[in-house]
Image: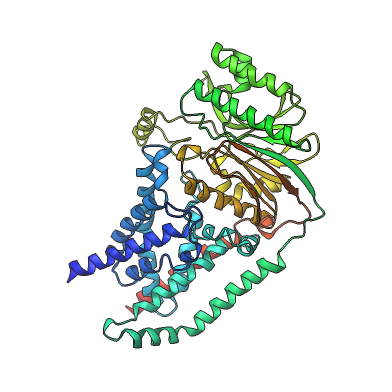
Length: 531
């Protein structure tokens, strides 16, 4: 009997992991099946609700490993260790999360699903913070194709959408806990009748969010200026193959730029992707260490000198800096350059680096071994930028350029907008994954940056998803992924209002997290007295 129960529990966990995976863009659908998100975690939470604390922790490890191996199946292409590290991290997270969900149900037998929802949303917020911050799998992002919910995020942020998505799963898991196999129809009916008011309240809340996002928060930007941009998609990963790959990336970028400018002489700015040109232009122009690299740098500088419009390009920036021990060494940065009239007029250096693959700040006896392993696997660590740069073109458009997965963090785009950015321009290299669904998972998160801040999101990528999202969270232009091409589009420059999220940040998530903590403390004290 215990073996059968365990097998049944594991089956439900597997179903839940699949529903979670299919809610987002995945290996069967590049767009994802967003309605599944509303029931995705119900089977897993049902299993947790009827388990003890130890079993819940073990199930958490299994669920974390399976769900993120499926959801982030493509991440192994980024780094051989990533497909092991990411699922393991989430396995550990769920080892803590699942027992907390079980305790919430124990402390509050009738309304524990509300506390469980708050715990889940608080967990989604906490896991975006710090060195290990990682936003993939936040359930609110599954709704990126629902503009009303994208606009609604301008008040509570994407985690407010997550709460609306998570709550039905928690409620269903509670309902089915009272269902008996020998009286299936009767107990299901009784359970749903018992919670009919709860369902009604949720339906009203969801309808209100859709109404507010769909009507009240809809922005009329018809009077705003349009910034005409050409987004170049060279469809080659310049990090694969050294100088030959750098040359091919440059050749394609130039070819597509010239084709776009020949087609439309009203283009105001040309945008290339993250690391579209890898050798640091400024560094090699100054120090001339490698003749072959210098020749390539001279080619791009000669091309830029001939251009009559500004170019925004992703590049590896490098500087010689004095270290703590007094030595001077080269430090490389993942960066964005603004070229005008053949000169670099401004640089942004990435401030939030990818853990383990771009940055590993821990050294010494405790974690030095891990750093050594990462370096042996040809990991290249970047320097960490410190400034939230706001660029301004000669024709007066102010923009900032979160690089790659920086657009998956709400606080970063919010900070750029607060510093004066009128348009958010994300430069991304997702070509390494060779997966449209991987690029779509990333793109789904960037859609919410437009909605949260009521600012246009422009994405310049080297393989997808190259697109423009307007201040209403509507995708107004999108290019075909994994092809060499260019996309000419208008980016509305809207600045007439500031959202609640831009002003106050993740206030909603903090309140929900605090509410979950207070409820759990109260429940623990009351349970202890009762016992």
